[in-house]
Figure (cartoon, helix red, strand yellow):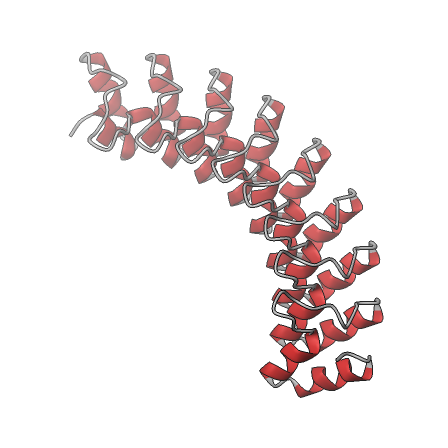
Length: 288
């Protein structure tokens, strides 16, 4: 057994004994973990405090690039996060995936940790290796309270990830109606298109998220935007067989005769899939 194992097991007395006997406080196990990263990960505040008093490297990064603050934030260990911040942990350090403590806490839904990180100058718009910000990961994970908190602290509402997706597109795709609503209330751009040309309306229509489609339409979204391959919200809803969404889009002036790059209208696609009710609905609107 060594100091890293004792820290992992929350054995305060053994950790103290190791330090008194001259053990290197920053020694690593074979996976690159130190006593401090283990204790922070598991929320052992008393051990963390002891290690810091003995000059543990607070910003040491393990094999995945996580430091003690990242682990504490990931695991929801609020008291340890506060302790590390009080000892000048680098709040914006990124791991090998580009994740910061703020991104990790936002993803996993720890509102109190997000709040204290912001109070300690966490970069709210920092992006990870995929281009995700804290707002994006909170939106795709359905963490409503954190989305609100980030917006109150001036997160970039229209920031885009490496695939061109915004927080609104992510929330619309996953069906988080309350998040979509707060993003719209804060003036998120409803017509932004990701790298394949999909809008929030298109992904909501494709996923069958009726209430979100309704919210987006009420905010004046362009119902007839076409994606890279010519698809529209109406074409996607017809493809998936969502009768109620097709009807709603038609009630909001969706163009029934727009075609994809293969020359197919929403009617042709509905016919191919055997959606007879949608076929009839589109035919009644003059679709060919």
